[in-house]
Length: 535
Figure 1: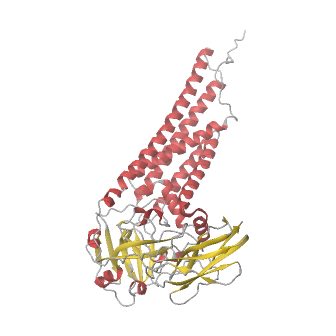
Figure 2: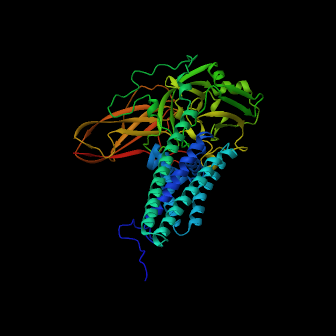
Figure 3: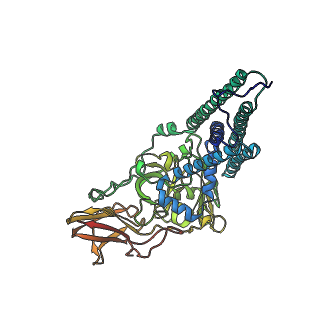
């Protein structure tokens, strides 16, 4: 007589082969979460930029083609870095899900996939400027943890599958108990791993921030009074039309465009600037050395080369710093030099024509912005400012080295990628009021905005409605030829759709070109044009 030892109907159902793939997909997510959390925790004690997401993101930025870089800035603006990090996270989630599903039948293959993620992160970390071998450690530790978690969860689930699919010896009660215990074990383990991943990530981020932050050191700095202060901004420098930008851009509103996923942290107490290359005397200067020098204060408008016609990547601030020409005079420039190659703490380089920083304009190494030490995201503790040049050939942030050299001998980051070596800022006019596609009431309407042609100045602005004549706009008071200038004109708006255009005449008498150019390789050009509806 045969005894029936099948599992009673109330026994917990098994994880059947070929079903419940989502369980294994979750295992993949848990493994990835544990890997990322572990890597973040290890990176906190090595370098925040060694964390896999930042390492991979930085390596991606270095290899981004120009068309994609310009698309990202135009489409996402200053949120481009957040979009990149979100994309990296999305790709990781997809890969983790795939590896989890594969682990059900092909565990070795899934483990290779998880390990490959860590190896990619490690390789990316080692390609970063000034990389050390230890920078690969966070990604490697993360990959090991991820593989171990995936193997453990998968094997535990498979043990439960076997225990419930094959009748064991003994009573049905023992079999039911084993299945229930396995299910509870997997659930508790999964929750524990999820908690570990979250805690490790949060703690790692907090430790990284605490160890690297120089916000406290910045707050303790008291900037000296300038030996050569800026003249007061003329009372009429702001046009006073609601909707136009402020004449002086607040630090919090100033545009930021750079290649960094996280803001570099440079401690002013250990800061050192090296001046070398084709000079008679190499120099090493501390932050206090710079503060003790003759400081000048100037209002200077800066523009990013990625600024489209009518774009927002332009700002005006009051900068405090040391004239570059004074530093070069002390170092002694050797004959034949025609370039200053400046290097940031992250390895980013900028090439600036030597003739431009020594022609009398207020090219400076800035330590202050609008009466405060430089904000962290704008280059604290020292950055370079050169009136009249786009930032990619003048505005080195987090500056640590100035090398006097030649264009023939060395190229900088963006010139290696196809941008022009010489990039004076093009004359540009922006309509700020009314807004594009605005609906306005008939009658007297103000058309207003801002124009700039740094180190040439703005002598006139003209406005055209539809295809009518060019009409002169009223100009606000000019601060200096290195700052932007606001303008406005009264328009008697009539019903219908209208096209508004604006152009400027710079201080040399040249009228802004109508020829439309993209930002690459030396800055955008063309007239700003908007459409409004009057009804």
